Length: 266
Image (cartoon, rainbow, N blue to C red; front, side):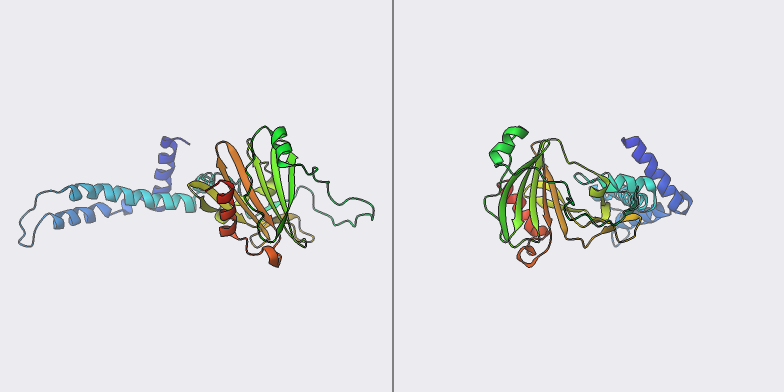
């Protein structure tokens, strides 16, 4: 969206919520300026750089008010706010309809319940096939055991499993961005901006889920799924923690950021 379009949207939203005929800010500003320009004896003072900035301050205040109105009350503003997300795709709502209502079916005893994962490889083998050097942690996080690497297309996935089962830690890296589906999107208000050293990142807890007999997926912010995303030198990173058994429950937002900093050598 170019500057002219943003300016037009701001102006339209501001006029809708606060008509220009109702704004009486300038007389107050003029009164402030007049009061500042006389000393206690009523003798006019020299105009100062501070006083020359007062009208600019008024303009900035109006712009901030307009921006808040735009974001909170207009579809254009909400869309603009969502577009500020760098790493997670913004969901339009906290729920979305399913294309086909899910029906619980008991599987046959000898039938698989999920597609088998890609075979485990060494990191060196995964790097050779993906065509780039993958970053690795300098240690195995407490409560986990190292499994190895897998390759999904050109995405390198380095995986750990909670000791005694009940959780996983997965570090994915790719030069092609993230494989996104509607299930991976996140309502913008649940995305937390974080810093990984000097790098910008985004953290999310939660996931879309389907409750029994539901015909729509609903965002559950308490789901035991934590994701941290960032980018460096053209490689897109994600650390995902599944499960919250006692051995790994310590690994929260701060814990994932600490792992990311180790991964980046920071």
